[in-house]
Length: 322
Image (cartoon, rainbow, N blue to C red):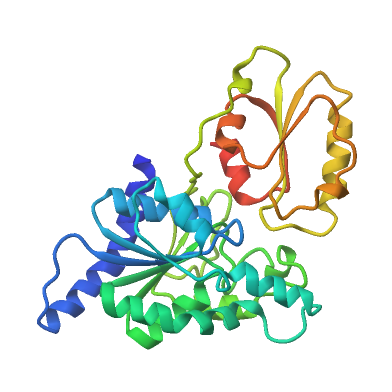
């Protein structure tokens, strides 16, 4: 946590300082503790890094208000962070499910969701009077609209590598259809005043033209508060963690089933985390050495594991390495 606080506080101070100077010029000096509005969605794996920054800012004494869906509210409750909860029909995941139901025809869900949420966010800005808005990738369009409508400075938390102009790795190599290439996402983030990349320059070598307002801050890892299962400490064969993307991907259940059947022939114990969005019926028979879990803290399993089998998402890879 000490590295997290040093990274996010030091980087965000650039935006906060500019916001304070603007306030002083307008005749309204600000206290040292800032008011920060966080736009959050638990739709995909890009939100835990935002959660890490949010909790870090809250613990540093800043006044943090979140606009998020019910899942965010539940996870942040243990941290004592006040959350403005969206109505059930408002989460981004609902808009995305509708888009998929139409065969991914029509406007993309992110801008439609952002337009639907903007009036509520503007009302929250009027009541809370934040100096800065902080977003994740999938809430970047909402943050862009909020910045334009309310005149706020904006910091975007990118969960992984840099994908802006002149990036060394092609954007299309990691964002497949129907999600990519996310030209709208790149365009929206281009308007952010600060972008924090939750990775290391050793993993993500920046191009010579790396923008000055972009910063690598190292992995930003956060998990919902939960006790590690007692069975993890029972003596026995080595543990293996098998996990999938938080956002279901085509064909991954077949790969997961193959991994479980392969591990069944080895002298290991397996924890396989499977979210509610993954079709359990596509998995096939579960071997006797496998524990199937809806949620277990990955960090707790990895501390006791000899192997990770996953989708190579940046978050779980960072947890395994660190």
